[in-house]
Image 1 (cartoon, helix red, strand yellow):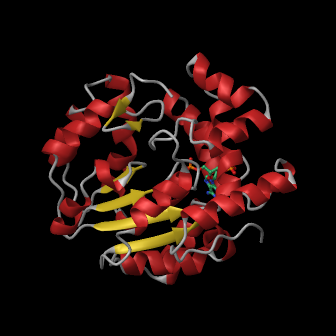
Image 2: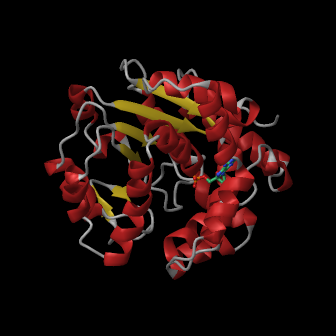
Length: 293
Ligand code: A3P
């Protein structure tokens, strides 16, 4: 893992800034009404984010505002720390804040004091592993990272399970460590688990439960509209039609959107190895993964 890109012993994923994270940790104040979408990369973050954005911001103006924000920040290339000041000035009662950070780098006590909400997105780790390789292969990253993802499935798999792949965790750690760290906060009254596979099974039911957790009342028609607008094919079409750099990354992100694709890559031994690691690392963690539908 690259040495230049870390803070408090955590390696940051490409494109994420330790400096901005440290700035936010020390200076950024959370509010009641804030909603954190916490996830490990490639677990369905963008899908959940789009659904939550549509649940929280039903009005046209706010919709446009929040849509434009990340793109403008990139275009202007402002100092990443500045974005927190911009965020504070936006006329938003509810702020949707997506992060891949481990709890230690956010200071969860501050989230609790503000009474803010946390949604933790989960996906079965086998599909996540495949998705991360395919995603990184499409990016132009350092030689070190590209070698990890491009030297064949076997080697990539080893880098993942030994915790060497750049993923925002400490050296030697990976997805189950991220889950375990956040699971500690499961009893916080504003903590909610969302599962990719449950969303694939019953998106209407999942949107309803999520809206309830977010304390937003939606009519049946709203729910149907959100489900339709955030379907894989509709999200893919809208990301592909936007012509800018940020959308390019999002379009690459819309790969297959399925459950169980890992079977085309894993050997039986690799699958068993993951099962064994999860059993050990997630001992006492009451979460069931769904590996096929
Ligand atoms: P695959 O690579 O398996 O297709 P993240 O947003 O955390 O980076 O996760 C990306 C994964 O979520 C990708 O998985 C992507 O296809 C999937 N995804 C994105 N939007 C989706 C949607 N609307 N429905 C289902 N899956 C979606």
